[in-house]
Image 1: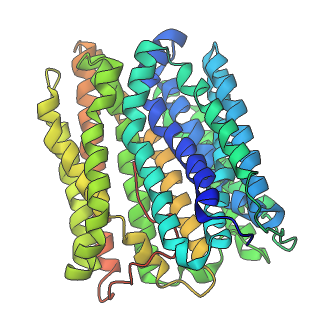
Image 2: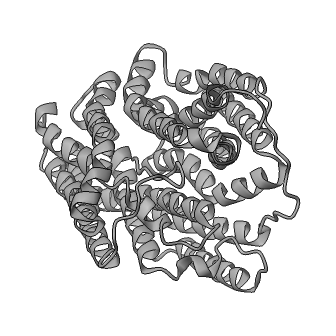
Length: 474
């Protein structure tokens, strides 16, 4: 590595990580305003929220392969430019499908940025500074979570929702300039191949399944279109399994999944993503459309959750060492479930004070799950830590896509049933939202059982991070 300080390298990496992580949380609070301005249906709101996560998660492993093949800094910079172009066009969108398409383009950029930024930390920073760089990377993700909802609310209320996308552009330009102000040694690995068939088949299966879950409430579960799309998802998933088994360079090597610990943590991450991502979107709608919070008030409502998560993360590793991964991991996931139940108890005349206990429980519980990924990475085969980390991250993000769709299906189905009975819209939506929260709480309890079973007899791993991606954030 050239004689450049760690700071010169980590600053653009942290900025790139921050801006791509921020875009997920900052947009949710703006969705009610976008829905009003562009006259979006509920399913179009869900697609606006999921399009970014869908392409981001589906292409995450491919982004890592491209970084290996063509160089970390180049791929991160290209990803930032793609993300910036998508941001400009999303802000200019005047109809739903243009906005959804540009959100998907932003996700493509994010899928290039995230693994490349992690690879820079692993390859271009001296080993004695790597722990500090990993902490800065994690802090950037956590900071995006903390300021995203509040910033989204303020920007939407005082500048208008397009500015949540436009303000990405100067940060993107600055980050690319800073990235190329450093001299790093990076040689592409031309032997690194992308499993194109695996990417296309897995992405196709996920997209079709998401479409079924989002559109079924409008078309009907028994409609020919929904059945055909569901069958297509099964076919694409089957192709993916066949491709992975027959490929010499599969996206998901089989030996990675031979550990009970790794499998259980990955399943817990999936259930966490299913539960919390959809709830986050519909909580923003509940706060603004039912409780009549302003965008700024709605954004600030999420701050206690984010702050408790940030404050809890440093304590988590201490508790894991003191009481064991099995007990603390299961207790943390159960606490998230309890928080969801508490939020579900808030009705159409609820207040921030009534929401606070549930939000705090979710924040603390999520923060305490942070070391789970380190536990999973401690048991994977030598030299597969990076891929294993990408798998757990991608699993969580993919589950987030389905989480929005599943929660939306629950909310809309319950809402329609009550509207048909003459219940007013606010109470009908609130009842559907509460059903979604309780279903998410059930998933968290299942995750707690899985973690408790999977981590039994497992000595707590050394909390020195192998990778920077071990923090779960909503």
